[in-house]
Amino acid sequence: MSRINMAVLLVLGLLLVTAKQSMQMSLRNPIAEIETSNCKVAFLRLGLVLASDNNEKALLDSGLFEPDSENPHVDIAGRRFHVGTLNKTPIMYVKTGTHSVNVAAAVQTLLLKFRTSGIIFFGSSGSLDENMLVPGDVAVPKAVAFTGVWEWKKFRSENKGKLVFGDFNYPVNGENLLGTVEHQKIDMFSTSEEPKEVFWLPISSSWYEAATEELKDLELKKCHSGTCLPGTPKIVFGSKASTSDFYVKNKAYGDFLVEMFNASTADSASGSVALTSLSNEKLFVVFQGVSNVAGGKSTNAGIKYIASYNAFLAATKFINSIPTPRLACE
Ligand SMILES: *[C@@H]1O[C@H](CO)[C@@H](O)[C@H](O)[C@H]1NC(C)=O
Image 1 (tube, protein in one colour):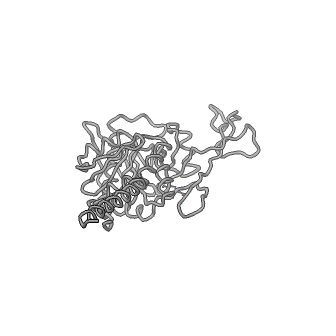
Image 2: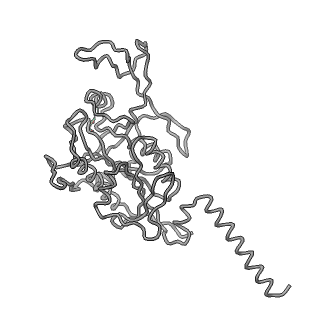
Image 3: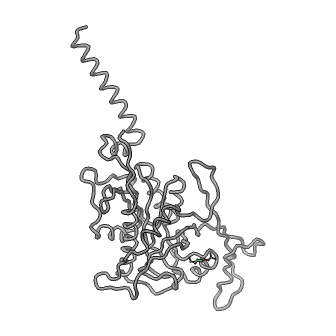
């Protein structure tokens, strides 16, 4: 064989090996490869998770998010994962939609497909205690539980749940065919331990502590296009949060959540962010903009927007305070 033919064969062989390698890689993790193939993006992004259009509007209105010029987004299962920077910190963000299934699916997808160092969630919640949290405030909970996982007992069952419908009969308490309900724990799976049943899902303590430090002097927004909050909004640390797929506008049930669980807020997303992050053993933190009070009068759109914006401000200040973890080039 001539020397030239040998050289051609060698080059062809090398090409085949390279093609095979990159195909294996892309089958394993198509998105991470885009991110890391030529060492252009040699760092971990933070995963910013938000639930609603109103939350996304706050992010976009701020002008702080700059989409990546080459790969601004990736669509997976109908969700758009936006790649870019938030006030110069590399992030990706996804709008999950509400309710536990949607939120968990989006967070799990984000964690599987992208290299992220942790999850920062911001969203809206209802206050269960007007003396502690009013619309426009931001709650930074220390723990969250799913309070919509019920075992609904038989009428007159011996073994009663703590939520007794008869106690809420109006105008006088009595018996009620709805009987009683016991709040259940939820299975938590994790990469390094056997699945276990849990009720409270603790926020990652290192990030919670960092948030209390970084955000204590954060100035929140008070007015938006002519609508102003009646007081000065504040940030409240260390509360307990309840998540369920039902939206709690009912004061009697809100009071029950306070009495039973000492919960201060209700929403339909935080618990899913927590459970999914814990399962993947990823750091996470939650910022809730209070948009209404359970049983209180309904808040107007301007106030809901301010609540969303204030939660966004808290998330942004937190994100900008943590150093970007760098990866070695592959
Ligand atoms: C209930 O929650 C409030 C506010 O987060 C906290 O100050 C208080 O210590 C809690 N009480 C109990 C009994 O855990």
